[in-house]
Image (cartoon, rainbow, N blue to C red; front, side):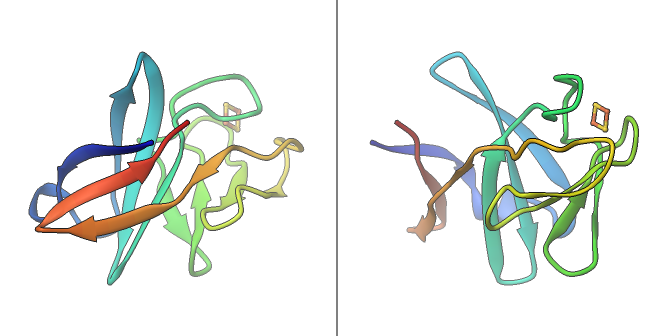
Length: 102
Ligand code: FES
């Protein structure tokens, strides 16, 4: 089901924003014209990903121990994380960010 998680104008480019949907932590990231939504916790030690930063295009570096994830697929691309993070489809409509969260 699609959920409204905020206004696109309030999402700074290159920053991760933590949002909560139905009690679950998610992270929303804007990289230029692209917006990604992932689970909000790192698969390494369940710490918040939102304080991290983009690396190598659409990869996200966890602020805690430096693991990296592909924002489009959730795949872990750098240790210490080995498990992927969940990703969610995103659409922008009427200036709002919609995330397809089951
Ligand atoms: S919690 Fe993310 S790399 Fe350790």
